[in-house]
Image (cartoon, rainbow, N blue to C red; front, side, top):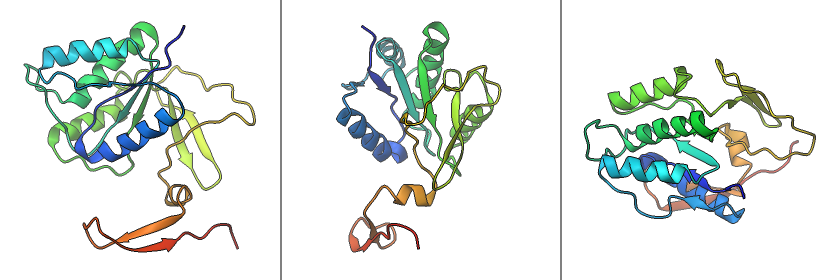
Amino acid sequence: MASTAVQQAECSWDQRQARENLEAELRTTGYPIIPDRELPRDEEGYVAEVTKLLGQSALSIHLVGAAYGAVPDGPTQKSISVLQNELAVGQSKSRGLKRVIWVPDGIEAVQLEQQRFVETLHTSPDAQFGADLIVGDANQEHGIITVRPGSDGILPDLAIGDRVRILPNHACATSAQHRAYHVVHGSSDKVEAEWPRFGGWL
């Protein structure tokens, strides 16, 4: 029986909330999520464990943030995000592992190493391997799915009524998922007011 497990790659602190939200949604729909335990913090053990987990996965999801993230103790000094991407590319090449890479629009990487990693994800077909489809454009009514430049992947044969999940990054499409806005002051977590969201069109 084919695995339905989803490997949620570890991410930097600035994408942790998005990762937790996505994990909760995937669990609600019945997908087993891995890793389900703490991973080793030394590079050799980390690489071995992530390789094993990827081998049990049908899909690998990578949320890329502005920060470089944790670096396991080891010779390459690569972050967990970089290591996981490289290991997932290997599995995509060897057995066809499907991948999702999400890099938010307008991201401004903090460290030079992360700037290089984000640039590599945007420009290198090898770093993107296994993640063939991208959202080329989006508006209130449509998400336009295209094959990433340089990929030999093909668009899926979708029928009217098939469900496709798109992570919205357009303000209207994002706010439409919620019933209200929570208003905070500056960087405070305290909710000062709740504004109901307007629904429908005039």
